[in-house]
Amino acid sequence: MNRPLTSLGGLAFLGFLACVPLANWMIGHAGTVCVPDGPCLIPVAPGVMAPSGVLMVGFALVLRDLVQRCLGTAWGLLAIVLGTLISLGLAPGALVVASGAAFLLSELADFAIYTPLQRRGLVLAVLASSAVGLVIDSVVFLSLAFNSLDFLAGQVLGKIWAVLISIPLVQATRRLTAQPG
Image 1 (cartoon, rainbow, N blue to C red):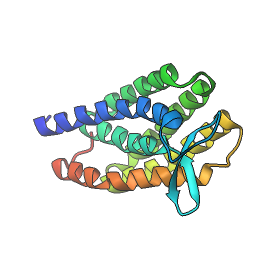
Image 2 (image 1 turned 45 degrees about the vertical axis):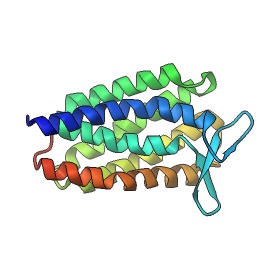
Image 3 (image 1 turned 90 degrees about the vertical axis):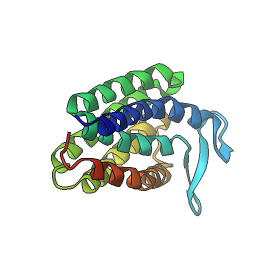
């Protein structure tokens, strides 16, 4: 495997794993508004707020795809397992099940969609798999954590912004390799 691709894969792997504790920290500490006994919120569109950790979840979905592209499916699955364990270990007590389940299910859905689509085009695969993963993550997390889908629109929009911001990195990766990993 070529060295720049392996280096990019390693950075994507570490970045993916870093997204997990950062998302958990942000949800309780960073936002324009912090709800008592609830999440810290950020605006993601005019009049639409979302728990602040959504940005890191959106980036994580893209980074996991890049791990798989650069290092292969085994590394992509290892990233999911390690990310889930980190999520379970770092989430606040009340959010452990919600965080772990949402992370695991959304990343596995992303993996299942990305894997067959990557041969048709990297950007298409990342966008399609991330779209499905971010909806699953949002519905599962909000349902389990807050027994409410009140922040669903904000969750989805926030993650979409993170995915779209990541597209230049995806395009740069595509230029490095024409072969899916």
